[in-house]
Length: 245
Image 1 (cartoon, one colour):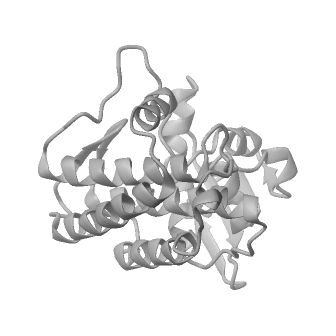
Image 2: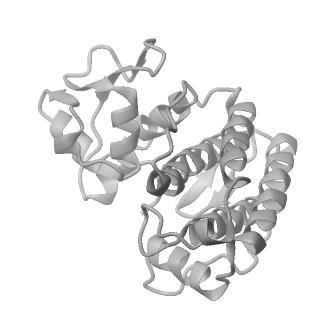
């Protein structure tokens, strides 16, 4: 189960990103992000749009946040960003407003009531976890071009949990039968985190930061330094992802 502290941690993660964004100049917003072809402004617009979608989803409304027939999630996201592209100084307050509204909606949501989200219904705490994972990953995208030191915190435990929890989905999406996988990670603080049954024959071990980056598609498995063993450890690492396909 996701940690009950995920919503405060999501707020803290967004506060950290907001502090960085608040320092940007108009030319900075036009800089190409580490998620090309999006600029920094495009990335923050995407975050604003998806935070607005959180509020709609919790309210039970669908709004305009939907995919066309045959369209992948990534294609739909790109289309929505292209349709509303604006300069960073216009995008930033929209995200600020949207992220605060989403936090309020998540706090007020019934944790027992599933919310329809992208690929599957999620409980509000799990939805908050996906929002933390997305803000963490996109913070890397917008800070990297500036060479800014943006070290991980132990808040990425939520991201690591999500990566492990969605492995069955990742296996099924690849046409495979889900299998138990044990994940043992070293946190940024040096703490040790473990997910999955102790007796699982397949394992992934190593840095939590690397594990989360592989799941966010920001690091190749073969370049991660993570170790796998057992009949399905390497496959699990290749399929690992923290966002919907």
